[in-house]
Length: 128
Image (cartoon, helix red, strand yellow):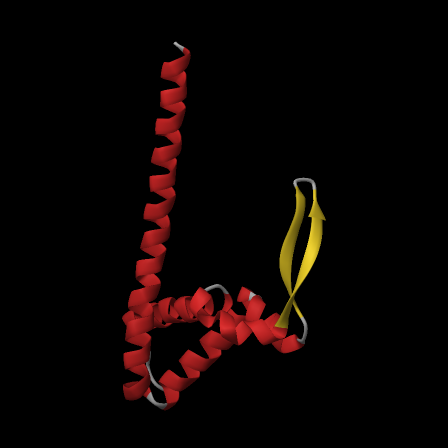
């Protein structure tokens, strides 16, 4: 078995995170998920909304980030152990994208907080 450095391990984690997100959430892979899910109308306290529900076990795999995460880790980790030189390029790209998306999430949340607080401040100033 190959000795995996700490940096490679972190890269595998980030790559698995990004691949999982790509499979489960991203618009670009919606065409893969579409045949395995159906839209169902759901009544909520705020009205009627539509929700995608899996139509098969494979559909569940494509919609469940815990499941897809396990398979992503298995695929990337196994591929790295079997074909480290070829897989490293894929892992490098996915890990950079994964790290970037985590940073973007924090930046996006903080931008929304700033916008929210500035709107509250404007409302408070208008009341005075």
